[in-house]
Length: 592
Picture 1 (cartoon, rainbow, N blue to C red):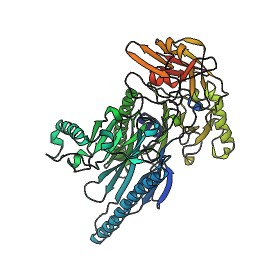
Picture 2: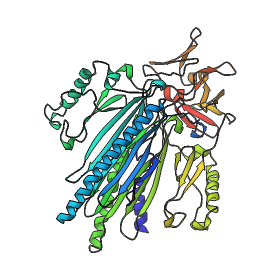
Picture 3: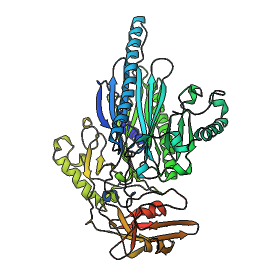
Picture 4: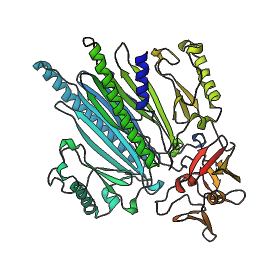
């Protein structure tokens, strides 16, 4: 028991819990197909909705483009295959969408069939020659993003990474990219689309400049210029120009990618959703085997939080591996003849991607399996949920359910247990309530409260999860009192409109935050300034900007309320004026 507890402590240090993907299966299974999000892949949302202004339970579901995955798993003595084939839905051009999905699946299946034939041939040759055969592998993962200067001209950008091992010292990866303009008549987006007719000169100059920084890392004179059909994807305001292994650099260089900033005319708005990619850690020796996917965030509105988060994830993974290896060495020293190597495998699921459709929340669930001797290993679940805002902040059960969350959530869990009580421990050995430290993640309109193996039920039950709907707040819900600093603003409340977007009278709140206001009656525009900071909002225009940033939509245009006051989305204060928001049971507090 002491060993198990120590292992759990180390796993807790590893992290965290993160957000809607399917878990990779390494069991020997026949080919299976399922609709799921690939590990580390976020759902891409395109649609008019506010960023997270109120607790997620007040957010209306946005109409969106989404990218989910068709999962294909095969495991035989000759081949291990795990493919997450992207499936796009919600494009305005249904015919183009169908063709795109068919092309991506057709390519994936052609790769799978080719490797399957090679694997069968390799296995037969190994048996005939009498040498050990290492199964071939094929893996497909993807990442997806949204960019563009507005909803009508949004670009869906896909990057597909296919890894194939077919014997030899190592496998090799191939990157395929698809960039689509989401319009009534969809079309492929090219470098010429983004950079204009002179795109080769501008892009080639930038790539040569980047290569010159590390000339020894590339083949001499290998780069001669980008091609008309050059692979690229869009991320963080840049075209990410991709080259395949060995194309311009040695294998050790991996897949060279060059970020070339997009010109101002095609500068994308920040992606509505956060992407979570997997940084794989695969290592094995006589002491242990590690198969870890370290989550890597991108697209978070709070860049500092994102940087710190990613660093913590990588450091935690390295620390866990070191600890596992030391423990394994001690076990082998104590029992060399009966020693079985330790194992660790982590996968993560992106349950909420930070988009408006997800209430502006990022919620990530991580599953960590460890084996350190004995009959069985342990699976530990951890999770982290936070708001995707200019200043990211943790989301707690109290924030979602109010100050009485222990009784409300606890009662829901207890009710579920009562319906199946023979499968749970009784009395003090079983469920004793939820606390601030209870593990949970948020997916769609539900909270999932998770317990560890053996915590409230026999180990054979796995990790019990309880699905609890988020509180519903509609147009008739109690408004939130707006507080700036420590001052409650008289008559100023955040009230959800018919679309679930929180609306606030702008003048009092903006002045309390230190802004000077100037009204232009001719254009129905209100200018706000504070030092060098400036913005303007216009009645009827769901287009918000700050200084020289590209305009963004927040889900509702400025309008007049019943008292004749101009109103804006609450998100205007957090996403445009960069105020920090915190929530109470019946209030929202803005800090300068």
